[in-house]
Length: 249
Image 1 (cartoon, helix red, strand yellow):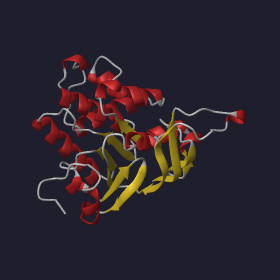
Image 2 (image 1 turned 180 degrees about the horizontal axis):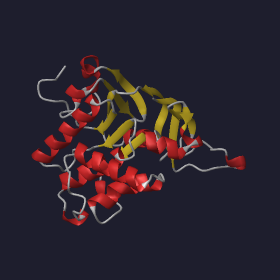
Image 3 (image 1 turned 30 degrees about the vertical axis):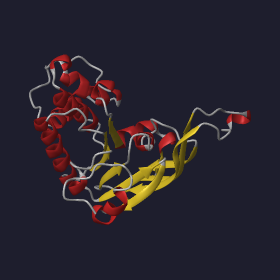
């Protein structure tokens, strides 16, 4: 479970006496409270600049809020970053930003290695993660030779190898061709069916609206819409996000 209480994030502010924030700067996330349950498929929607990426990066401590608290499975994220980042896997919008090794196997193994897992456990996690994204027996493939869709799947596998309770994907379909997009969607359906929470950040709901249990719509860093897709559609249309054909309110 991920719990946010009054989370606010600013960029460009300054710290004053006793390291107290002076409340200057641009507010990217503004007083957001949110609970994400185990096994939920959540879509975080909104136009570019609405605060989506900043918000989800607070989930595992990649961004520290200026105000408010974030807890993962009952523990404050900033109190145990290793636990938070093990429980909340993150796939960035551009996979190259998180691919750190020259081969597929080495990249997927990177996270478990840093957790101090045994060789046997690392091998198991790598095999399971690659199977989950339909890349079994691709351990020796060079990252530089992969297509955009394959790099996206390796990034997902790297997050899965941490065996997270929650998987966060930031604009996972950007730049993917049709076969790659369908492959990633299939993986997300399977992961959700297996009990992993899936959190998709997007400005384009065409691929994921029908998969979502709940939609959070952001505008100017604040929660403007929250609810199941059927109830959120009318308000989502006012946020500048792209809705699927036939889903106009």
